[in-house]
Image (cartoon, rainbow, N blue to C red; front, top):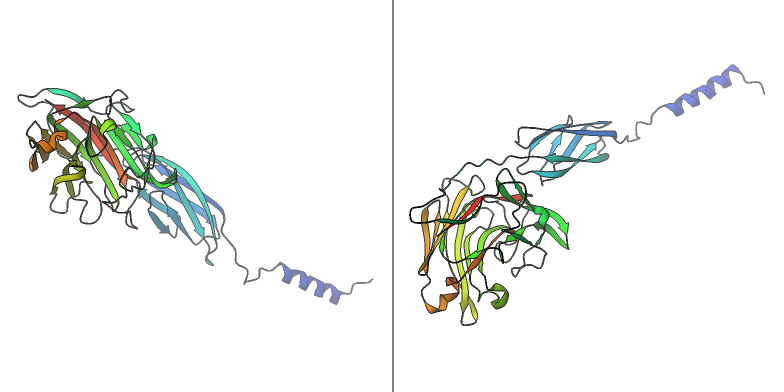
Length: 357
């Protein structure tokens, strides 16, 4: 068949029209690339750079419940605690089509140790036991881990595991994280000195920086050494310090005792608050009890705020040997559950625990 010039022109016209992009066709982002540059000064600052063809804006989810939008693919974030974070980057087209990518960043954060401190000696007292949390691992001669997500008698929401405890830069750090383990959606750690160290009477100093946020429940406390045989509350409990986080609570700590009162639970406690907008997450404070056969007295930064007379016969369990428990719970009967304002991970840092007699 002979092709005329007019027919050829018509064929070429159809071909060229078919090669043109239909303006109604939506083009998704492609070739998403993302990089992270981690500051080496221990500040926790990480800068991110993302690029993608056909993208008009980006969103960064930093792996700690924080996120930000960016039109040029540049972002930065300051992390509060050392951790491996999974960062999700999403690129969007002008038609809101998207592509995403995850990158892992291992961040080292040096926690400032500013705040109140106490001496290593007192007149008339000897330092009989201590843990300064030097080195890189928890001292197994002093502590052991407790595990699981049983609710721990308070309908708590966390699963306790070893991974949430680290020792670095002279600090014990217990992290509460939002992650699913053992049927729970939060994890944390709980360490005890049971069967390794218990004592009766003396001055206890614990220098610590507490977490914050609704549903966060840090505690530095003691149970009677006979807990395994008598159970709670017959064994007695001395709470050196507890805090329930959230607005209006992040600046307030409690010192409490619990005991058995003719087959029922009894308790007596006091509290102390920081002023001028300060929070216990801002810097380190020293939480102290002075415990003898007559009284338990609580101090915050050497300021007395609560005392109980333990001489009555009904309080005899508070005159027996006890062991330490350090933990950060999430949720439970007292603090309630985390809410949308609670940011994870949270951490409690302990500089030292010292016992003087």
